[in-house]
Image 1 (cartoon, rainbow, N blue to C red):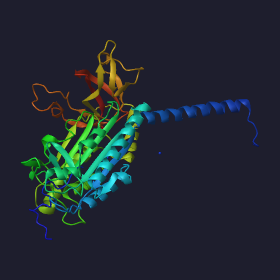
Image 2 (cartoon, rainbow, N blue to C red):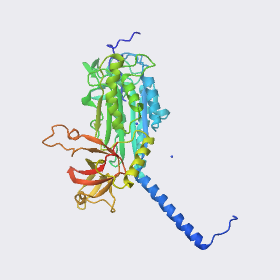
Image 3 (cartoon, one colour):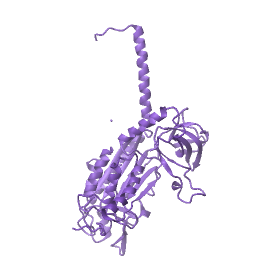
Length: 454
């Protein structure tokens, strides 16, 4: 079949969807005492090193669900070319970054029943890990990052997003829905039950978002589309949500020209993750995807395709891979131990969110993202003082100003402050101003070593 760049390989509804361990003599008493002293000193040093590494290190459990559906045969779908290759290639990249993808969380050409079983099992796995972290009270040292990638047909009905199994076909939209699964079925398990579990969810959506109509048994037509106003992650509370649509509202997402080629969007995902070097964190990753998608579309087909990226409540970020986490943590240890780390030329100022504080008589930190280095316990926000040193307990985004809407900003408050980067867990910073409160959230302006942000 001759490829026509002006005729995207989409189905009537949508092209692709949703989508990251004793015979020696006894020495004299004096010698033994000296040996014990030296040994004790050595053990103390080693213990101190181990403690420092534990403070700066956070164990991240990485789970991914990858589905590639291309073998659609019945109406209203058109067969796809790239989904299985997209799924295979992306799963290889995710595994190299430390993600767990077992046989139950990798699906090729799954039916509606297959998708429901995979999504339910994946959600249970994430939910059990969250409960395990809470049960062991390990929130300060452990977190979860989840990537979901679905490549296949998807559609919207009555503002609900659906993933279509390869057996989803029929004349009426209700028939298609029976062999499909609601995305909310998965999203619910990616929402923390407790706010003190670090959980970042990344949803990768490669799908046409052009509108199409299909008859309903109840009469009339049901609109089926992927619209940004119904982004299923927008309304979810939580600290970290990143969702990436392959294209903008009303536009198409271009398939591969043959079964040996990735789709435009997945090609951008793969290049962003691997070339020229893998990203430090997921914010960096999605920014690369945003730049590469239109570039690849233009080079390959001389057409325009722009992805749409949403980051909801991302108060912190996670390292892209486990190996890079070690590099960052070693850098943090070196910066904290070096004298004059905040000399002119390396110091920078920015606002960070240090946690939620509820005033109930004595006051309590519901969520805290810092530790005071010169005392025990956490002071009330009003007791924090300029010049005080604190240590970051989670990877925190740092912004150029207090990110609350004021008279000088007419946009959403998250957009009123420029993101300078991410301060890694374990870094010691100095309070320069604050705190300032927004509801229960408390923000402080800090002075930090600019070499530490990533």
